[in-house]
Image (tube, rainbow, N blue to C red; front, side, top):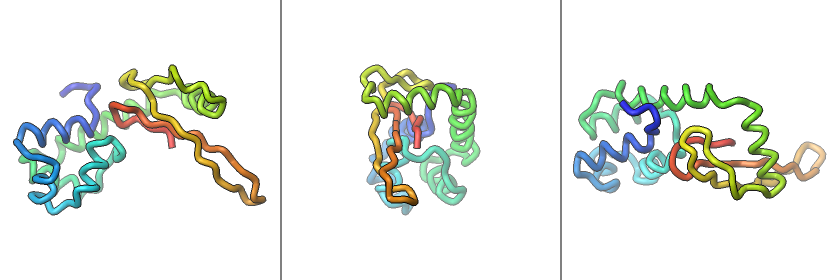
Length: 139
């Protein structure tokens, strides 16, 4: 097992080895294509047990093999300092996003700012980031 491979990369690799398109896996597992696309895009880091079991059955692997990649991502997140996260958030707010890199795989971070209203109807800025290659994200 490769320590730097994400859950998304692992599922995509298994699907391709099985000779299935994402539509084919959707039909084989009765999982909506949108859910599989989100998984392969790295939007989902952890899968519900029933979903993991359906995917594992469709790809002919043990569900625990898939769960192992979920654990790897959790371990990777545990090693990321809160200080780093706050530095990235500050850079996003200040518009300095050109050189922001993922702490897990060093790929470029896709960033955005969500404007929300607080309890007093003041605008609150919430920086968000998602890695372009792995499942790292700041919500």
